[in-house]
Length: 147
Image 1 (cartoon, rainbow, N blue to C red):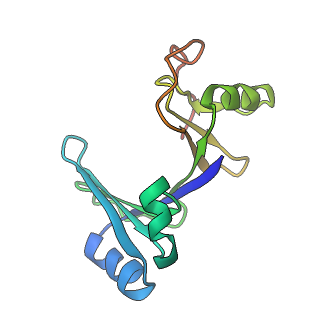
Image 2: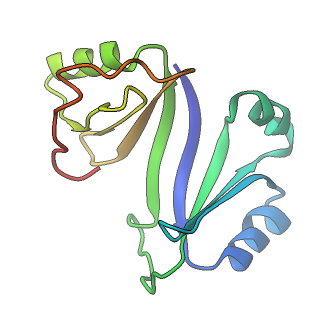
């Protein structure tokens, strides 16, 4: 497993980039717009992490901008999730379930799952490489709670 990114929601891209890039010195290393879902993802990396991001897409700060949201995110809601790449998403989710941890968003696609910490911090798990073949019980397992 290795750390990928932390996601925070932002309400103004330019103001956010001024803070994170101009102020703290992070560099924009990736930007993707999703018109159908109406959001933009911008990944930032520290100067010493830019080469690592080019190879592994980590470590990074993910800024998420929702186009049509007038919501002002308060403390806690502006924080999105932590993300980790894992060797075998099915095996890890099985292990977590056996520990009594709820899989909030099961890995139905063999690629992504979400869990929450005891303090309600969302954690995204992403399969390293190609998604695993779709398999039960994950394929038909519904979402549970918030993620």
